[in-house]
Amino acid sequence: MAELPESVDRDILEGRSILAVKAIRDARGCQLHEAVDLYHERYRELHPEPDSAQEAGRPRVLRFERDGSLVVFEGP
Image: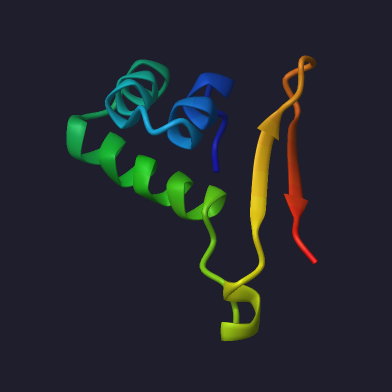
């Protein structure tokens, strides 16, 4: 996805959808419906659907590090 502020990912992961949409609008200068579409696209990138039922039971933990990087821990 095009460059978006890091705060968008944090807001999405922490359930602050209104703040995420506002940040997208501010960064891209787009209409509300376009920002909502971009929000949903980014949400799907951060919360992908499991490929199979076997993967559905695997826990996944997302965490932001102090340096701003996103770390994904996958269960066994």
